[in-house]
Length: 251
Image 1 (cartoon, rainbow, N blue to C red):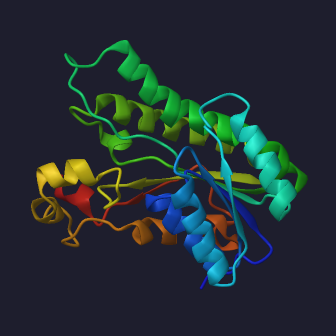
Image 2 (image 1 turned 135 degrees about the vertical axis):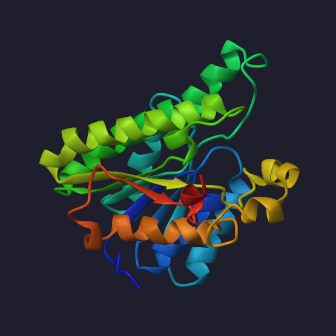
Image 3 (image 1 turned 90 degrees about the horizontal axis):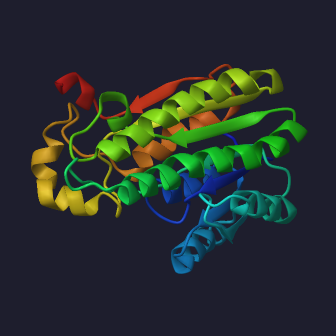
């Protein structure tokens, strides 16, 4: 197991799905974990309880990270509770689809605000704390849709593609501070956010599109996240790690 002892990881959107899996895996690796959530307090506290029951350290912090000042307040509170910050995972986001004809500006702006502005504000709030520790690691969850585009989910794909460029820009800007910034791009992953689309498309038929013959699970993404947070990846920055079970090779 990768060792994250003496680290403190803040996970924006850590109460469910991939964020929850990353929170639990980071805690198993020895990190103290701050679980940020928007509205589902029960899910966030269930994640914290699972970590604590296993002997880890964790706390939950409510914040709409897409609103200016909210991420800053949550991270400040997390540091006061669990100690100096060394890592950040940006998992908060939405996945909503609409055709060009169906979309209005409010739909488009909502996607950009939550997926892109939330990423920007979380990273901005975290950087001063990481500088105090002479470096750290930021992992942003993008999507394979942000690499190749997507019909019906064009707003989502655009926001995810922008996350990749933001990540690369931050890797260049923050490298002098020894702050590493990377993305993970999952393909279909079986989470509650993706469930309605997977139910409509059919899990079995979608699974056959993967070289490995199945849809991804949250732990499949959490594992590479822990690697990027660790010193094993201390010379990795500005990269997008595609974790898609070989789906891209199928075209």
